[in-house]
Image 1 (cartoon, rainbow, N blue to C red):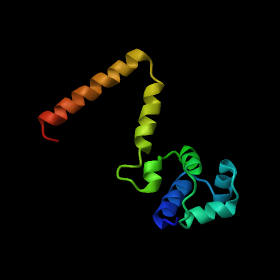
Image 2: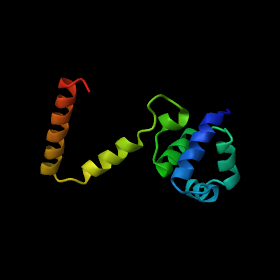
Image 3: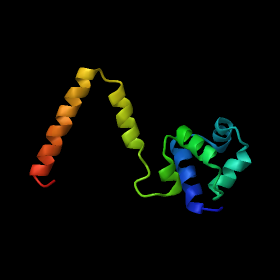
Image 4: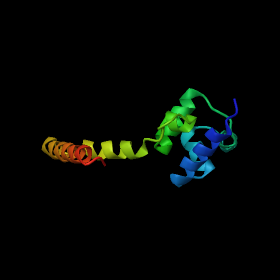
Length: 108
């Protein structure tokens, strides 16, 4: 199957990650030519899509073009929350609740 937009999204994420095709290929255990084929629109197996997502810090939804698919910021936020102590998580929860309440009351 060919999906040029899939290839463009892979290429965009690869460049954002600061990787060249050769390095991405090594990390995926495929040859560089196959990465170039993917970036040209060849859609790989589900296993390779998942591997690409892990390496490129993205989601299958994003690479496949589903709405709301790029959850990179959410993943980074969750990673930061996981680093907090339980009492610190409660503080963040409290602040978030207050912010959402304020936003709701002020039609923001």
